[in-house]
Image (tube, rainbow, N blue to C red; front, side, top):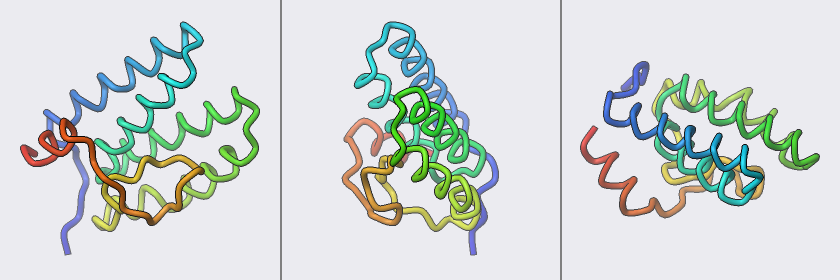
Length: 120
């Protein structure tokens, strides 16, 4: 069994860039774009416990800001198991991480992220 502990540098850089874009959009009250970058950050980091958990934490905070009860509850559940699933390399690739999709559903990966994941 493969254990994921540390995200490779190219993925870490892309993950951080998505979170920067998220913060910028959030500051400018561009909530749809902010969420888009959170989802992309989740897809990039979901195979690594720290980044995966970090994505869900930010999604939880976003849910609170938006007063979205479904998102808050969904993120609380994901926070309980997401990091562990990453550690044992058992995540549904492409899943965007929001409460609007089933937690175990594989989803298509955008081409740019797929290329990035192939280089790790």
